[in-house]
Image (cartoon, rainbow, N blue to C red; front, side):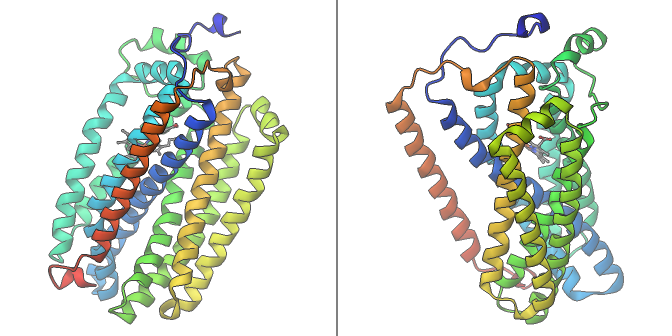
Length: 375
Ligand code: HEM
């Protein structure tokens, strides 16, 4: 069936480790990438609104909250980028012939991501500097948000196009220079919206955690936890609605295969359960406000992360089953395991993660250098 669609055959070099090994690593790092993507999108959205409204209305906690977000965003962005690179490598290993083809087909847009990421980063730095001095930063924030949303759209387009083998030839005939960015696919808009609405969920949870973490100002804590609570709850509800749109927009054969597969069938219930838990925790935060303690921060952060992991695994199932309907079974890739290399890789991977955790711990313990950052 594959041969009739004409696409490059998988790399003849066998995989140096089993498929499940790459899948586990891919899901782990992609979950971290998605958490940071949603965190950046969410804090940009909330931070820009709070900075604008707070300054207009002279609302001190709102301005302080927005400055806290504006000042932290450049650091979170570094994690977003660093957690984006490993899944790109694993996706290329498992689905290279699909991802390369779709990336070439939208080549002009795909290459523009590099420059767009640089623009987002620059805007975040300029905004962050102003936030640290308690100056208005919503203009830079808005610019960063709009560009980040465009990057997300390009990613969603590519990840969708890599599954639509049937449109490739015609697309190449019509736009041989890679200037087209397809938007007609019924799954594209919902999957983009799912990631964006996740910004409210993760952004809200990050507000709860930040409010509880700082112990200096009770009014500020109450403000952050209360708003974080309702924003996270609203985000999880919105994600549930959009998530079902993503599911029902899939081709009928893919929906049937997802339903018949024990893992994905049960995962859907787990996903609904975790989304409901986020809503409950968000409402608890709304009620508890300044009385909220550390356990709520830990529970909300864990639930937010697990919600993202569930989505990543389910999303992977959609990709595998869609490609299976077209004759490609990722689990059939040739494997010649090279365990010493795998062990070396795992060792350096774990050291890398520990170094990152150490850096995060240092950043969290660092003393603020001026009064505005102290909040
Ligand atoms: C502001 C910058 C970025 C944003 C907003 C962003 C957003 C997104 C979104 C929304 C998706 C999911 C697309 C979908 O499935 O519908 C995604 C996937 C992905 N992103 Fe990012 N991203 C950014 C930067 C990066 C960077 C710099 C890299 C790596 C160099 C990266 C690597 C990936 C990979 C590898 C995937 C998909 C992996 C897979 O499907 O297996 N991203 N990103």
